[in-house]
Image 1 (cartoon, rainbow, N blue to C red):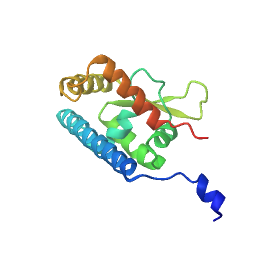
Image 2 (image 1 turned 120 degrees about the vertical axis):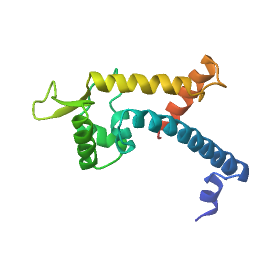
Image 3 (image 1 turned 180 degrees about the vertical axis):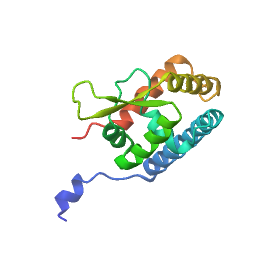
Length: 155
């Protein structure tokens, strides 16, 4: 490395590293708390937690995705999504439907029972106290920050 290249390299301060490590630790704790609520509700519906990711990818109000799209969102193999979809379909929570623009593809959509499960999840997460310390404006700010972290703009 040349001296001019070293001068351009960003310096990492220990405080920056520690702060980011603490952010990750807290995010994981909050995620674990949310996962516990989700697992409890899924259990009450007799749904295994192994399909929670696939179910989450079918959020109401979004266009029904293909299984490949779900796999891409979850960063997993399409066969994993196919197995989860089979399980969810056998439980009456999702239905495979023809893609509206491409008849060769199939989408996954929540059934009425799947919507009921989603509503129960939303209600329980709201009542869980996860957001009790945040007012509406703080929740909006948190959502904006987490969304920005999830979709960073790369130079």
